[in-house]
Image (cartoon, one colour):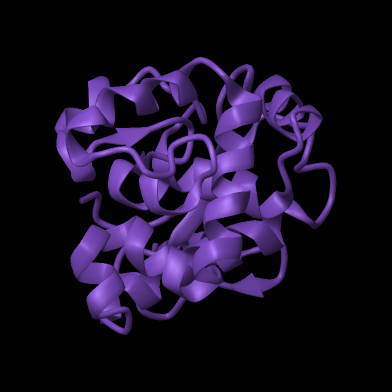
Length: 186
């Protein structure tokens, strides 16, 4: 019995030979989501990278936009698209939204239905901020941009990197496998 439990824990903490981020309390793992392989292919066909797949996988189970409008947030905190990008960062870094006000956050909703624009905005935003700062602001908004080195942000960043590594090994770019890391949703 103890051996079985330890083996199960070891498997959930180690997938594809790469270590799970050590600061994730509940570990890491994988499971199957019907149709996810087709969604991964839609994302890569629209210009998405393994990093994009990993970020989208961290945000929703199906890598989709069928979550509550704005992710139940408004103004600069409102989230849009498969990455749940916040309006504050979008209007500062994405050419499509530059110069728009906090109150115009509903304009970000186009990213929920236009995958190519969503991916383009994420790439522009990462180019604007750099990966580490982008992750910090993506995870914690304005406070993340001001204080990018919290343990929560570091966990989220390592979870993206771990998931990206998993996706790059084997047939995971086209199959229905979803990877997860225990990161508390914000």
